[in-house]
Image (cartoon, rainbow over all chains, first blue to last red; front, side, top):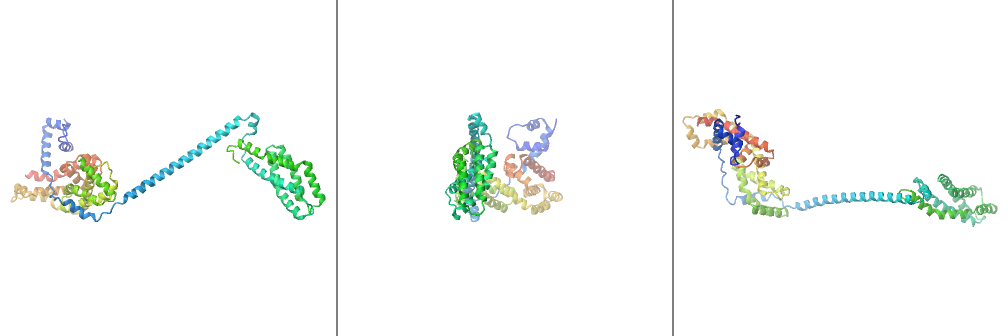
Length: 263
Length: 193
């Protein structure tokens, strides 16, 4: 039989009244442990709780008087509210940001799906045409639109130009020089995207622009007539107008082909 | 008890809303019970009064953290125990000096074995109580507090652990050590008696 140690006896002493435990059953059977427990009871029994000096009824009031001046008035409810509002505000901001991000992502996904569906609904040749185009094409369309507009204006002015007036011819020459560089870029792009109509028209325009830009001195009537004839013979102004009128269609086609459809 | 809780909670709401005077009612209601436990832990009336004041000051500052579902009496009781523990910790140097003087085993034996005095006279003159107090003083602050709460305040191990901010097993061990040390201290006296 294992005897109870002091800790078990102490625990049993303080758990008296909590029902019969294993230690209690052991003490009933073991005289040696019972004697030790009795000694413990005797020792602890001598430790009677010291009765504190009595406090009168006004004691609480005296304590209150002694500390009340040191206590600040609570205004921390407001701070607490601020804290709560701050956290709430941050939570709302985070939730809104999350919502906006989710909406943006969902929008992108939806748009992507829509454009894919639109392409799939196109007939096969058109679908082939609308195969993924590099983003640069979109830029080309915009540049081309601007270029054709300026070219058309120049050609109209050239058609009605007065050869004797230096004030008229000089700005035309400057504009032609400016357009010449842009025209070459557009020509290269037209060849790259395999648009023969556009490439041919830009070739013709290039010739007219080059003649005008590179002409030394004033244009005389013969030079001007030659240029105007060249322009008319090719139907260049008409071609430029036709190409300009097709720009919206080109934009739409590019938009359908491209992922975002933006220009 | 429930009514008192409701009164306490109503007072706390008023205090937090800016009515400082409402704290006076809480102080009046709980000061005596806190004095009792503070006195038992510190063993000194002046210290106990200071502990009570400090407890109410500390509790006031922490009032925002008081959870409304808790019992204010239990909550402030724990604060009082901590304050008392701090107090006896601060007095430890002085007390240990007193313990060294009063609990010297040789001195105990001299006191008890004095033929002229005799054990009966010792008991009658209250020196037993003084020796018990000396034995109590030999305990660490935690042991003394744990013993007071267990033996005199009849608190459970869990309540002692919560009041001291320690694990229940550590609280139980603190009580064991306290009882063991005090029995050892008083053993010579028991033999003589």
